[in-house]
Image (cartoon, rainbow, N blue to C red; front, side, top):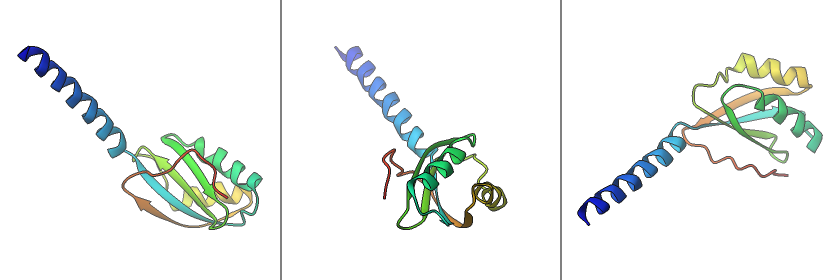
Length: 110
């Protein structure tokens, strides 16, 4: 009985460590982008961002002209790279803020 409890506790510990590590490695960037006015604008920008290695989730809020991007923490999100990406799409990259945890959902925002 004691071995079963120890094994069960070990499995629970491994599972909780895996979950914690998954969330721990995620970083969120909130990108301010001017010129996005419609769902098509958001969709083309999201598609371009999702092509970047390490990006796992992207969500756009048209009301605030903000795109939130969840990355693996090693992803290159340099200002120069983002400026070029959005200029190619017809928009103006303004700035970014970084959060150490990701709260991006897969749902679309207005």
